[in-house]
Length: 237
Image (cartoon, rainbow, N blue to C red; front, side, top):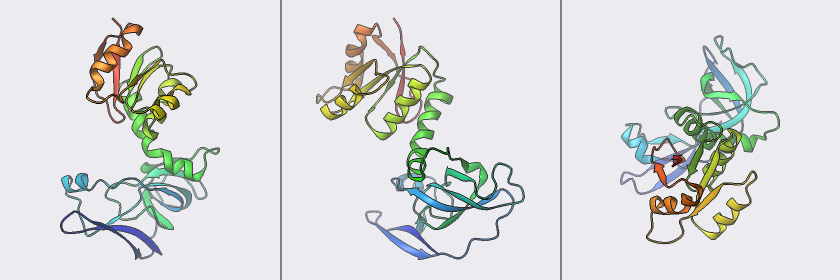
């Protein structure tokens, strides 16, 4: 069974991707799940973060967001059983690459995949979805009627954050960095309350946001950064 790994040069300037033969997975035990991979997302590999966490090694597994079918479970697994469809994120210290036929992962890194969500949709959205949900729900405690500024709303991360904010009944203000982004945001349903055009060179988001939101009665911003995506709570004045 082969898996995809990346190898970084000694100068940290060049990255090479290689397939390596892997040994058969050990017997599934305790809280671990053996997963048949159906889809895997390719996210950017943050080599700087790996260096700061002292997790550098010659070969590092590629692909952390996976969706698949449970093949086997350990004796202490309580959330899953064989044939369950799941999606999750492999931890940074995982020895298994997501780009492989099967992986071994702790059950706490997995959740059940919604029936109407495809394999590719599940693997492709779990990372940004978790980041956006953590920022809006756990860190900002967003509630109905509140206003939130989501930077770069036309990005994949921003799009998910906007939808989650609307789901919680919040009023969304977002930024656009190009005409294409602006047109994309204008098509959102339910509509975004306001979008701020950041395409003008030399002007940062602070004065533009203050000027753009003044007609809404929101001329002051509390720059309380929660998490990526950059979300800012707006105050009514």
